[in-house]
Image 1 (cartoon, one colour):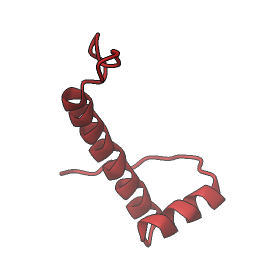
Image 2 (image 1 turned 180 degrees about the horizontal axis):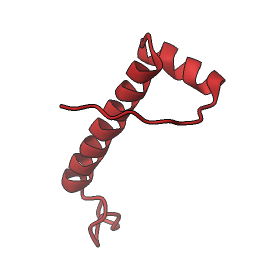
Image 3 (image 1 turned 180 degrees about the vertical axis):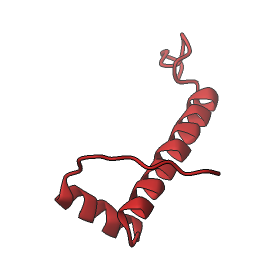
Length: 64
């Protein structure tokens, strides 16, 4: 996969906190890991929503 180069203004304190939380060594690695987490969470959330009944008309009916 080809990578693209971007320019961004980031809060340095937030970046350091994310870097530490993700165990990343570089800014690029931090951003890539954060993007991976966000996309994985989105898939996970869609699966939960699909199979949990949330969003269906009777999802919170009296019989639950």
